[in-house]
Image (cartoon, rainbow, N blue to C red):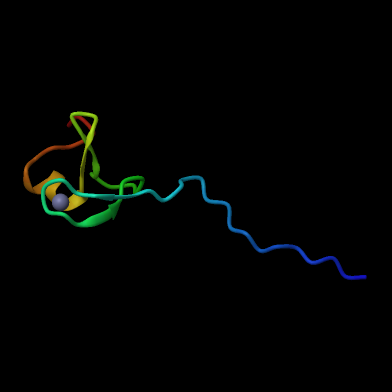
Length: 59
Ligand SMILES: [Zn+2]
């Protein structure tokens, strides 16, 4: 008998779709970009984070 193995990709990061509180765009907050929770609670997308100069990392 052939054993069927489920082809499930295990991602380290789980995609979490949030809606940017500034532009209303849906984005993955767990993406490795500048998207982050502004003030720890407002989802902000990569674009707005760069546009307004809010970065999750200190430079
Ligand atoms: Zn945005």
